Length: 426
Image (cartoon, rainbow, N blue to C red; front, side):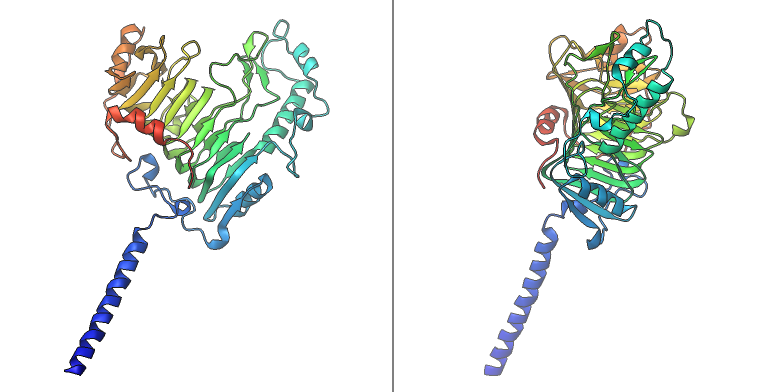
């Protein structure tokens, strides 16, 4: 009897131990995944297509970096070189600094032959036509490139770049090349170009995008705050009567980039803001430039939220905030060969902005534009546009998108995006 009782107690303890082991394993599996190693979920927009987007999820411990300075950040990107890597940014990193972290000014970048007054006198359109050529333009171009070389960095394939608790890249131009890249939870602010080019179209700052995807494929941009240095409505500098553009775009997706998801981002304070496709005549882009935007807040953008050429672009559950009627132009740009599917977005706009202004044709002929919630009321923005347009847009018949991440009913879009979009703590 004693033996049987002892055996029963032993078996019960063993069974209890097994149960505890199973429970502990279950609890471990239930713990949140390390966000640094999180991949884009299957079905979450175009970025999940093809081979999917995992970034540096499989990085070896020796390829996990914590960076707090520009020098550490640049070194980590160079170490990555295509191998799976995780780069975590902590605190503020100012890209407009020197080797010792000292702030740089235009004088640090200026070519010895650069002379602004002489440049303006030489290329004054009152007596000069066409794009500038000659020694002064060459000096400007060298100065421009010196500044760009300082603030621009390239994120290579198989990298996760992630911010920790409000981390910021200040004055950065972040260029994504290659494939399988994740950028999350960062605040990114653009840098003013001190050496913009005067050409036949005005003043431009080619290359000074805050974020640029150049031929990159399988990319996930998530919980970013991408901020231009100027509010769209701010009075802008003019020379020779033309606005001086000292920033390029806030987010450009070009040169055959493909399979991209941008989710839960705040993109604000820009003029030529979000561009997909950089030429009306790029047949090589056909079948590429497939992008999903969902749960983003496009705020105080004069135009391009986004403007699309060629791409099959899905825009749903986003919030557009227009605080300035005077400088607002449009949000959804229907460019040449574009295949835009726009649905279930919300707009919060000041008086003077109408639903007809939300869309603009830039060489495109058709767009699918589902119901939009405009200042609390559901509207047909395509019908409103067609009522006043010289050339109406046709309804794009599809194929309809099939890759959705989270999806909210239209009345919930504005409050949930206001609450949850943008960079946040890990």
